[in-house]
Length: 159
Image: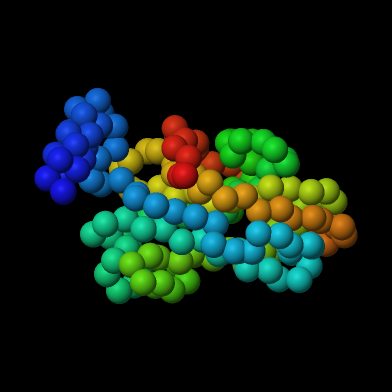
């Protein structure tokens, strides 16, 4: 037990000394569900993701300083600035996690897309990308494709 604690403190010290994320960073985030969907905009599908950050999400209500976004991109691609990123809104507390949701109202052209969540804590500059990927199949075109841009800092995959 003592050795494990010593190694953990050493690793945290090394990360902090290297200028990396330390105690103020998001500890975990995911794409909660769904993992597959067809025509999400036409059916009003909700996409849910959860995030945890010690001292931020473990209190009742939305954790201050958390930004959550749902992104769509080509199958097999890495989530980056070329993806379409949509802002998520706080939904509920789930244990020590904050859950976010995007109710799909954006219409994508026919095709198959991967999607996932990313999270950022105010001041970090880095996006924490969930390791889970969902697959959306768009058969009908329910409307026009919106344009969206987002700043993209360094990416840290959550595994």
